[in-house]
Length: 420
Image (cartoon, rainbow, N blue to C red):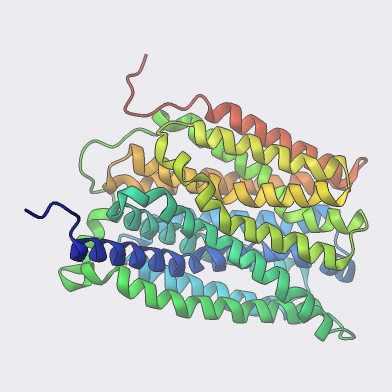
């Protein structure tokens, strides 16, 4: 009797794993477009735009506050839109809208118009990021043994967008040297990258949603994206500490991503050092899924969110204490290795604790508090930076917010555990 492994079955299983990884990698372009480029590339262009347009740090931070307000609006609207359309379709249209708005950025100098542009870009980003997260959660559910890693790969795509931005912006700025507003060309180049990402997303959406389209598409989509859920809904108070901890993450991390390049520039880091720092941060984001996949798969409570928030606070405080290159680089690597895994930890928490029919609701709740925190963070840090103590004091406040988030998340229990 043959008792060894079946080569055909082993080969089929390996092919299935490889296919899941390819789908996750291409799907991660949604995170690259929505966060890595549309949101975080602004930090690279903030210093030259601030110098050229005469912005204060408070106004420069206000641009990302407007972006976060748009993100909150998008987070509120996306569940409603999901009742009428499949998540893949929404993701593609959101990516196209974000790409157009990036191209428009190169033609805008008025601060009021910029606020409107950042607001609209936030709406598009939320639509892409939430629907992509929902598709990543479904992909993880189909491969439960590697769910944490596949979800992490999706969020890690943000790092690709960050690294591409770090490499594209200096070259575009150099090519436009001598022009009235050289930063405008950089926005156009970033828009081209976004359009390319949107085109690739079309490929992955067709494959991820093919089983749905083969049958009755609309009821199948509704069953997993609307409030018609199986079983009683879990009340929000049951994961209030996780939501609060994640909201403080939104307050704390965005100050770093908005102003870190400006801080390094003030501290005298040369352009090559800033490019290398930002590219390394992006690479660390891409590597992060492997680092934290086991943690996200193992725990159903708030411990992963607490640990990651605590590490992020340390990474945020470091460049405010010293401009030494090794410490600055370590800060970027640690920050990159952690911050998108905080986002992934909430998706993993939803997958562990809520039935599939409530995933969209759970992800939406976390996204709303995340966006609310980001509305507060940039303006507060910018306002502090305009006063005594400068950006260093603003970074210290961001670190405290992250540590407070860690303390709150540590109190979050598995929602299936008995209440006392």
